[in-house]
Length: 212
Image 1 (spheres, helix red, strand yellow):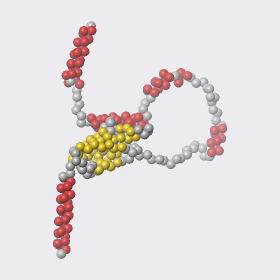
Image 2 (cartoon, one colour):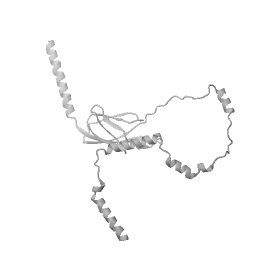
Image 3 (tube, one colour):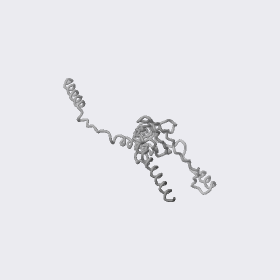
């Protein structure tokens, strides 16, 4: 009796594995496209470049370009993970869509961590701090200030030549990296092989000769 029961269990497990494999092979392929959005400091929607959109089990994915757009093939039922630095990770399950193309809009939520407020004082006690403040010799309000150092021309030059800060450098790097990822498979054209450019060049030469 135990041998028959074991045989029945083996047959049931084998049939389940076969049906699962058959269902996975017959899943439809869908081209998933979308726009990933986020919010800036003014609470306005912006397009996020450099966001990772991938299917962990399949080991494939894509990265949003400079305007927050992505497109990649997925299978119906896949679990897609959308992640980016500074934002909460999101999941999207691909439905059994009747069409071969599916477009979604993903709005990311900022991952904000609030730290406990601390008080930093270089003095051991409040009384010592008050004594140090009272002992300060502050300069007069109208001291000898060179007005040439704060002229409008000098301030404008400082603004133009001052390097970017941390957030601006991060945004510039993400934009450049997202653009390179989106254009790595795009064809590279040589402007010297464009016949229209040569035609414009010869036309400009003829116009210069007429002017002379």
